[in-house]
Each structure stands twice: as C-alpha cells, then as structure tokens.
Image (cartoon, rainbow, N blue to C red; front, top):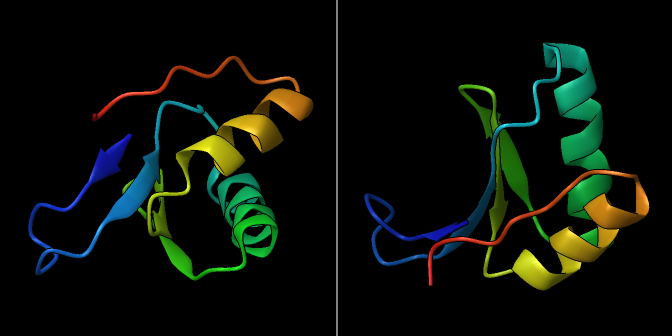
Length: 73
C-alpha cells in the first residue's frame, strides 16, 4: 500500500502481511530496495520502501511467487 501519514508528506510504499520471520523479512527488504534503487526499512513486520514503488514491488513479489494486492490509492 502507499502511505504518507506521519512522514512530513513523503510517500512510502508499505509491504505487509508476508508472514516472514525477522531475518527473512530483512533479506526481502534488502532485495526490494536494490530492485527499486531506493532506501527503506523494516518496521513492525512491515517493509517500508521510499517513494511510490508499488508497481515495481508488485512485479518483483509476483516473480518470487507471492500473491499481491495493491491498496492505498
């Protein structure tokens, strides 16, 4: 999903509901950041990627076998 609440108007793409452990989540976050060419972080079992990168994230996750649903406008 896309969100900008509580971030000074800056947009981030949030990936949630993956059900992965901490180390697996960090590895996937690193791969997504490299794929999109931006920064990001893992917070509360969600991955936050800077900017509106939903289409790139969706394509990458689908290639890895995840079922993806876009949300947030």
